[in-house]
Image (cartoon, rainbow, N blue to C red; front, side, top):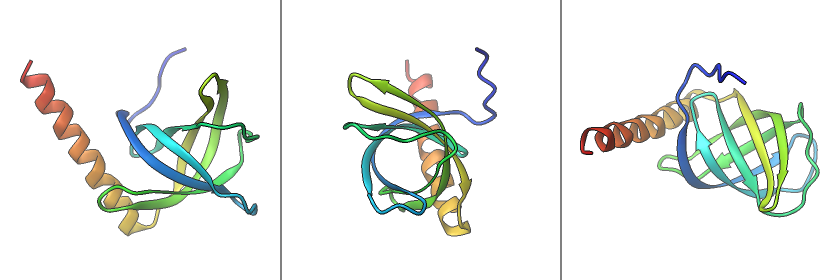
Amino acid sequence: MLDQRVFSRYKVNFNCTFAVEGQFPVYEARILDLSLTGMRLLVPYPVELTPGQKVQFCFSSRPPVKGKARIVWTQKTSSGLMIGLEIIELPLRFREALQQVINELALYHLTDAYLR
């Protein structure tokens, strides 16, 4: 399958919490990769989630990022449930915070490529 993403994904290892819109449980997860428009999470315990559900998410970077996303895909693995999220709503201050995180990741990866 051809990857049609416009924005680069960066491997990360951030803690994340999220809740399905309209439901009570708050889930803990790890963000495995991140871009300006989406992310891949690993929930390390059994949970039932389906594509199309909307979630509120938050992750503690400097500065923190909070927004709304849509589950695009899920995949059960031996480590838990892998989830692909598309960011659909991000208030301006959090969009700027995410852009700052992405800029730092891009600079880190660029520097790494030039120092090999």
